[in-house]
Length: 286
Ligand SMILES: Cc1ncc(C[n+]2csc(CCOP(=O)(O)OP(=O)(O)O)c2C)c(N)n1
Ligand code: SF4
Image 1 (tube, rainbow, N blue to C red):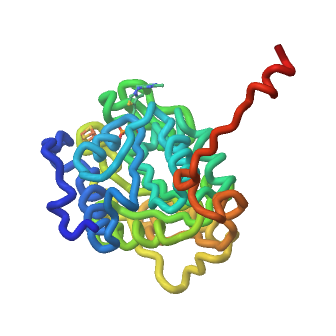
Image 2 (cartoon, rainbow, N blue to C red):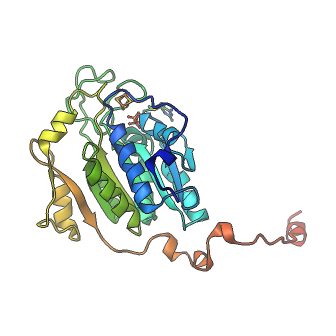
Image 3 (cartoon, rainbow, N blue to C red):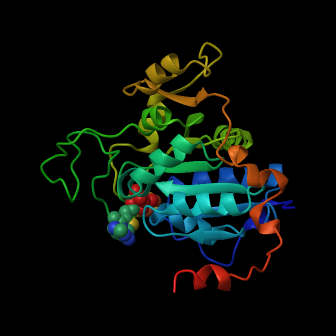
């Protein structure tokens, strides 16, 4: 069981830019891991390709860095093989919503019991600053020098519409709040998405730390996260002083794994492998 955040460090030096919002996600996750005792026996991490994916190099936990956009299917496979594991996906807004958009939608629809931590910096960071599906209309970047003509995607609305049963937003600069949300998302039985507002200080000069500090507000008791229409309405809020953070939607529904009879007797990895002679079967077809 992980007892201190130091145990989670690796010999790899952190190579994120100074001030990058990924630091807050890393810190919040380490704190959550210590509080809940996540270790190599009970937890597996998966990431996509991007600056966000480097987080695996800095966490001393079992992990797999997949192909770009393919973190969620790898996590789905891990969860099916051993549904007793806590499975986390670290993904970028490009990785999750562009290259991996199809996987995101279908994992949400299946309500797989995994937690997706979306490092939402509204830009492609690793490839040095191109417009992403989260970049707003008019956004100027290397790939849209005359301004983005596309509307951005809203990952919270998309997750809810696709069937995710836990949907939250957090700001990486509020580490305690993010840590609590990571713990709640993991405790939830079903597909959990946390849209983490994560400034890319090098390439996104619009969504800065100051921008978020000035414009986010925490959801209070008045917000009933169990009511989908109200939650969808909340999810649509975005603008000056109007960016809600907190648990936006949570509902109870059987997870994908809970509905598979074979998994009731134990995880697939704990099943003894039986040898079967298939010679007779094959002989029918040759
Ligand atoms: C199939 C494929 N397409 C494109 C790339 C190049 N590529 C690597 S990372 C990246 C963008 C990453 O952006 P995002 O997922 O938002 O992560 P960030 O770097 O911002 O954390 C791209 C386009 C790739 N590796 N594989
Ligand atoms: S390029 Fe942006 S997202 Fe990547 S490490 Fe630097 S600040 Fe962070």
